[in-house]
Length: 200
Image (cartoon, rainbow, N blue to C red):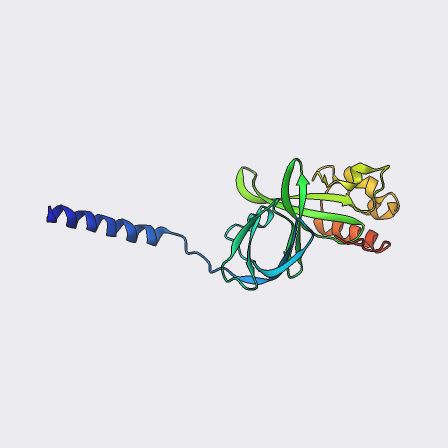
């Protein structure tokens, strides 16, 4: 009986060592001063984890520590309206029927948002981006422009055209065939300079 117990202990110890050797080392959680906006529109200040294991986690959930509590809690998309840290701000949006966080890339009248997800490119797993635009000034006569609309990487210029009606030259300057994130950002920021920032 003692011999069998010794063998079992040896097997467990070997498996534990093997598992630890093959386990990926976990990074220590890093936090920065941040906030979240709850469903009552109150801003709660604290610390946001800035290095999740998966960078796409920012778009579905985030870890938050209150100023008085040292223990972090995970807050899922849908439970708060927005959160952020440093110069990064994430807003809860209804993206194609799902409530998810998207990073707000521009302030002002036209808002460009980025959503990262695990996808595939040329058959290989890769972190991919979807971009959404909305007009925060759009009136009741153009309700579709108020909602986030996804930009196709192939026909993005066609989707952007209605948003640039008041500044058509900025739209014409965009490349017709190639989706250039930085070029789109520059055009939107240039457009927004003509209008006051309406807030969130």
